[in-house]
Image 1 (tube, helix red, strand yellow):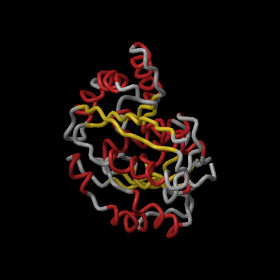
Image 2 (cartoon, one colour):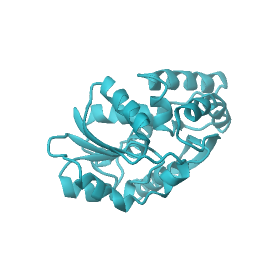
Image 3 (cartoon, rainbow, N blue to C red):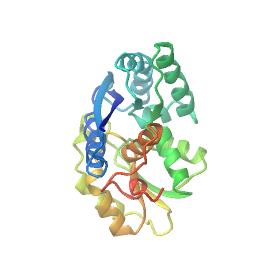
Image 4 (tube, rainbow, N blue to C red):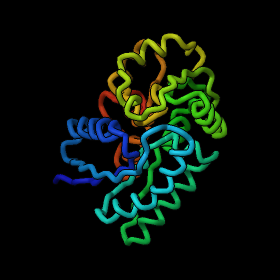
Length: 251
C-alpha cells in the first residue's frame, strides 16, 4: 500500500535550491522504498541579499509561513535557511522549532519542525563528528557567525572557506563542480567530517560522492542533514541512495 507524505518548506523568496535538492533526494528514495510517495509544498519569506539585517527581517516572517503550510496539513515542516537561524544567536534553532511547532498546533495541525541549522548540528552529533571542515558561500562576518554557532554546540571547525557571495541568487548559481577543488585546498587530514555546503541555497548534492571518495571523509551538507531529520521526524529510516554517508544507512 502506498503512503504519501506532505513535505512543507519555509524558504527565502530567492531560494531555488531546497525545492530542487530535497525533492531530488526523496524521489531517489522512492527507488528503494517504492511504497512511499512525497509531495512538496512551500511558503516564502522575502530575502534577496544575505545580510544580518535582511535575515532578521526574513525570520520574522517564518510564523506566517508555518501557519500557511499548516493549512495544507503537511506532515513535516522544514525551515530552509541555515544562516538566518544561526545569525539570531547561539541555540536559536531550538527556540524557532518550538515556536513554529506551536503555530501549527494552534491551527489544529501540529507538525514536527526541522530547521536546517538544527539539522546540521544534530547530524554532526549523530556522526560523532567533533572536528570538521566547512565550506560556506557567505561573507566573512556571517561565516564567522556560523562557525561560532557550530562551535557553541561543541564541534570544532578546524578549517573553512568563505566564498563571500552576498547575492542569494548568485549563491544558487555557484557551480557545485567547483566544490571538490575548494575542498582540495583545505587541510582535511585531521577532521571527522566535511560540511560541503553550510547553506541550503548553495548547490552541492552532485559533488558529495566525489568529495567523499577524494578525501576518505564522510561528507554532508545542510540539505542532506535536513533530509535526514525530516525522515526521522516522519518515523522513516533515514536512507537515501547517493546522498553521502549520513543517508547511507550507517547512522
